[in-house]
Length: 295
Image (cartoon, rainbow, N blue to C red):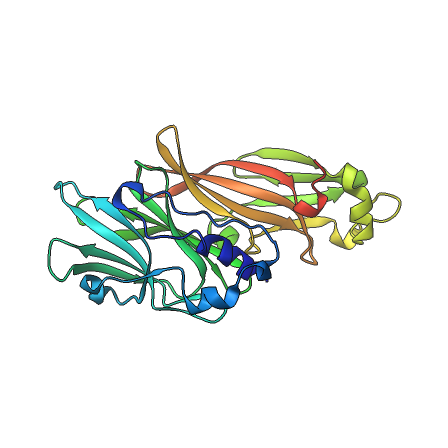
């Protein structure tokens, strides 16, 4: 139900994007309302995406989800198409694909294809309306697993190169060295070795919930076996791309969890694009996990 509701939130708003509004894609909105308030059967019988124009036949997609123009240094433009081959009975998009096409030819010439599997509410995001040198593909995979892939666009060839992959293995692959520990009274200590940062996350106002969830003892001390916290990406956390001070940045959400897998705190790692098209951690933000956020 959680994935389906998220899909419907985006799908009902999704329309193919015009060239002058490519970055105005609907965001994935995690509002867990009753999905059955919508006529789901009607939506599935009539997918919210338009049929792909015949001139893009080589793009191998039955439905057009999004499109945007890619400016080239030559002054010409290519078009990026986000398509899927079909929409299944649960609302999932099958055969998601990005294609770069040259529309100056008839039929349109395929410059590049990237097959991206299946998922719910797939979308392409840009850092801003003007900054389209980097794009993010984001989708909800099976099991409420939000994945994202960041691509750099070559302004000469119009081709995409993947520069960042956000999956459940993200903390290990990127060597995000954040550790945490539960202390007396609902105080959480978090430390980022790379950024040399020490943070206190105060969950004292949620101590009753922590005790009820059997993470803390009635005397306010954490359960010894669960005291230490590790960093994971569970899959429900968000990922986004944006522009700050003229430079693209990517926020990737992760969680500090107990050895039993219970999320205690949320961690957002902020990545800044460097001169070599790589991504470097420049900041980290900490906050209580939703069940313990009393503000």
